[in-house]
Length: 253
View 1 (tube, rainbow, N blue to C red):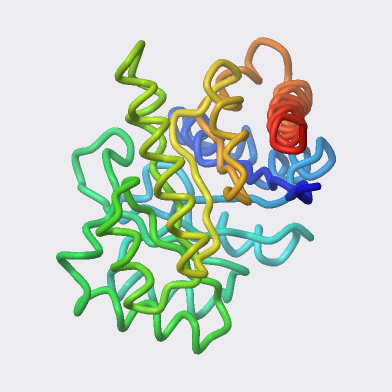
View 2 (cartoon, rainbow, N blue to C red):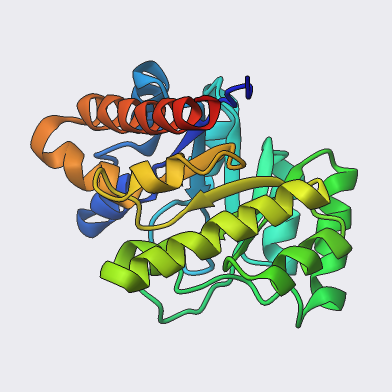
């Protein structure tokens, strides 16, 4: 019988800070959200410190490192400034993401294949500091292989194209995710996924057996407006677990 692999849930709290920053002041507090997420069943906390500090601030990162017990995944651009911040705070993990000043959200994965020489030193320095590095990439074989070539232990697959698609296009995007995750496993990479996942889309992704972590944020914070953060996280956790359990049952039958 195939062994069921646990699937972790990382909760991204960026948009708690977005709401806070819209008016200024200290409310709502991302640290409080992180603690609520932990109590609701999250396995980790993700926060993206952007160059323009549009949501998470340096003070937020310091507070999260100091006060939460869950692993902190710091999303960051591959810049010298962000590297220095990561090396100072020493989060559990750092996920290198592309960042364009005018984008509303991360619009695609890193071009690791085209930027190996630039990205490799970041991966090496983070590893030397015992910060687990992941690369946020599109589900593309060349990008997965390039991530392995520069020594990254983890990749995170961009699920945005899958979540935005419908019909046959969505089926093709799901197949791309499956194949990229399987290749990652074959190459010895730990594989995560995230971006745009909702109650409606999470099941198909959670069922991919070689994924070990999903990072979800914007949708959960949006749902929290209507039913509370605790409820949204518990429902997402249950949907992930059910999808993984169902997939495991099909494989074992």
